[in-house]
Image (cartoon, rainbow, N blue to C red; front, side, top):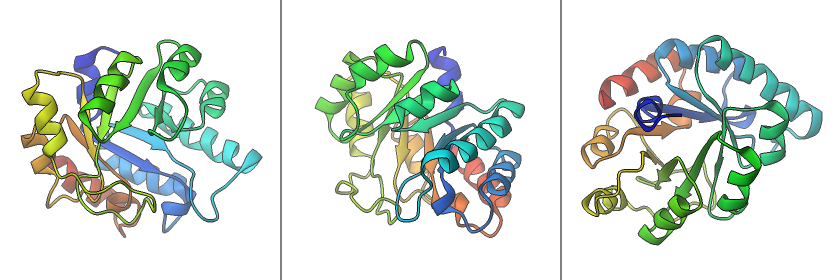
Length: 213
């Protein structure tokens, strides 16, 4: 995917799995799409997360919804699942698979890599990352093993260094604080609970989108 298109797709990046929702995952995704999300990541992790055939079934269902609405479908961490589904891409963290090896496996699909330091950003780029997930920007309760909060400092440092790779901010982002990520040089924000735990996922997505555009 061209860098300019990817930047646009990263505008409002929704991440979730069955454990993050107050109601059915498909319903939440449909409402989020109606509200204007531009990319989706299936992240089936945590206590009571689906496994095996159940995880695959939900992935297929969510992927179909994304395809119908031209929203890129990214798989978190599970490279085998991404390959089996022919997903649009994969996102990995620093403790997941090696980015260079993942790039070899997925070919020209989208590869996102989480980074918390300038060194990690540069390594991710060298390994073939298409975009960086920088964070956590603000305190988050969704990820139990989250890194220390960084604010927007890493994004600012990357841009000051003249590095132009697309960047999405993640971690504790709400419509009230999302704008700071864009002003620091980010191309978009990624959220889980700000949409998935909202009583009105569509309205929550609309509000977030307004704050980053």
